[in-house]
Amino acid sequence: MRHNFRKLKDSFGRYITYLRLSITDRCNLRCFYCMPQADFNWMSPEKILRFEEIVQLTRVLARMGVRKIRFTGGEPLVRKDVVKLVADVNDLDGIEEICLTTNGVLLDALAPELFQAGLRHLNISLDTLRSDRFHAITGRDAFNQVWQGIIKSLDLGFSPIKINFVMMQGKNDDEIVDFARLAKRYPLDVRFIEFMPIGRHSKWGKEYFLSSDQAKTLIEKEFGKLISIARNKDAGPAEMYQIEGGSGRVGFISPLSHRFCSTCNRLRVTADGRVRLCLFSDLEFGLRDMMRKGISDSELSDFLSDIILKKPARYLTKKSDVPSCDRQMSSIGG
Image (cartoon, rainbow, N blue to C red; front, side):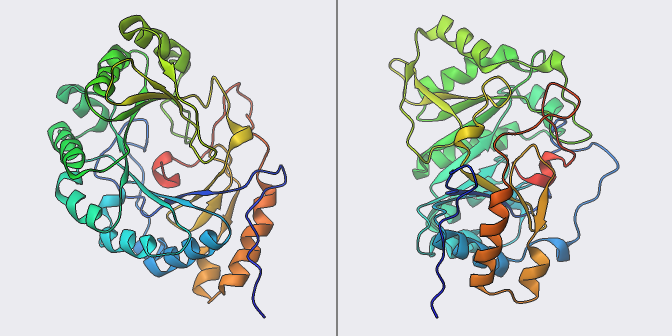
């Protein structure tokens, strides 16, 4: 009997069409706001989802209506044979968009192979254009490598290329206009992201917080009124704008100042195979062990259909007026 793969819909009528999948917790940077600076251990290799498990999961989700897959980490490019994984998922029916979020350190070397494997959409995390500040934020002297990776990706024809800039008052807010200038000069989507309190060891504090509205005001003071761009129904959370005469676009992701929970269409899976229904909730559902016992596609589909009904209407705060969760971002996946 042929199994009916139902569309993945939560109890609030939101269809899930977007999977953010971490393929490793390991990273070659040490960004102070992303991961603990001490007292942490990488997951052992046997705990990480195997490639065949990732392919099964994405195959089932594609049959349930997921059209967009984003590989994250840690840093996904440090995982061996990541190019083959991209190619294997690219061959699946129903997947319309494969994306990868990277810090860019290894991009210059791997971009040609990734392009040939079918990857076109890149998100590159970059919080400064100053090499000295890059070292202070990330713990590594690798700004030039990242910039070379961006230029290589532009030359190869990756599109869209999105630059993710986490805004931090007193840390890099003086570069907001400089990053907007990138979108004026290059065909890049530069997204200004509000600093979020992720992880029990988070360095987040109200003194570091800068809202998207504040950033937008600074940019419009320099470049004039931004031109709003309509979002398609499967778009991510960024509100996108054009700078008059610019080659690229700017966007604002505002999880704290402007909640977008009502339009959330995504599911997260951690590197150790746990489903998170909301970034700011530590409620998780294990997949890995079931898959290693030989769960069928139909059984996996039924499991996902059941747990998606527990997806909350919106993120909840604890005792503070801001959201938080215990897992570090490096463990959850960006």
